Image (cartoon, rainbow, N blue to C red; front, side):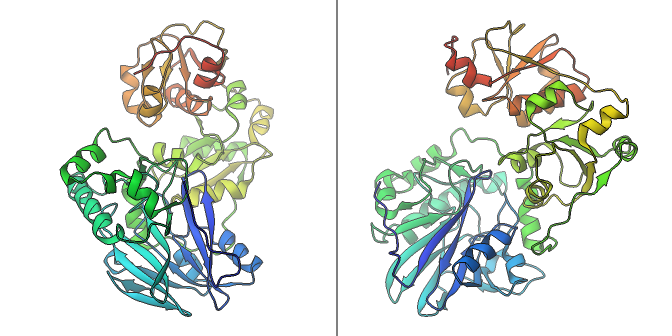
Length: 461
């Protein structure tokens, strides 16, 4: 795929900031007057401030393409550092000063122009932003309207709006974006790994010309055919998506550049809080969780996708208490919680599991089983449906991790070996089932990847 980029000596440049866990990118755009524009910033302002400072820039403006369902917008935090906010007027942001934009509105950026293009579909209020030098298009910030080989999904608002939004998406792209120059670079917000996205390839950016040849939005000349294809076999998404748009409209608390620390709690305090109903989350490696953990703790390994699984499995209003390993950063843990709007952080067990053991309290274990060992009956595959369809262990039962709790009653009794891609999600599932009283649980160490790499038999479909 060809891709054009601004030259280093031009009056502008685009610097992406990737959130690997959510599969999203935001962008810092350098402007001629040594200021910067940020497109779709995430909640933590520090990466943007550091990147701008490293280039001798001041962040002057942020631009929101839509009300995000997967992360808390950082525009309010950057406004606290002196930036002004641009956002769709239809977003109806509350409790913050911003300039509301509609289709065709233009903003002067020291000689460059940012033009709003109404592109409803992913969300009703969605805008794309076209950056121009006089009348010459320089870059398109497409949000979720147009992404490599696809578009962002339209089923996150309301089931009754899913098909109308898919039709709006088809028309938006064809009427508002299809006539742009072939070599114009598209900088989408949602990308590979995002639960907001469908049909995404491995590229983070693309061009109008490439999408004209490869994207169903532009290759299918029948709206009904596109809608049928686009809405066929929708994938699941984290449950917190249902509430975060409202959080972004209303506004989340501001923390500035210093998020609150996790308060250390004694063993006695942790036991009391667990008794009161606090959700205990163990963020250590799944191998360490298997060797010993507090009964009832939920295993979610602290990795880039931590926030997605937290938001999928635990309601946002629940108070959270953590057990982490000494080499895991408390700030990283807090920031992953805050970026999806999880504010109720009750603290962490001081001294980790070692303190619990030192107090003489019992720990639970879960067996790790190797690929050359007996799986003791049909195993449980907790990967996403697309992964299952691409290959699985013969005779396995499939239940996505996000559905394990509600489907627990349908899982046959007896010894059970659980697997995912590597082991992290399988251990999360095992911890959920253990908390419901299930015993004789094991996790396949290395997961499906280890099974396949060992040359074990596979099933597909």
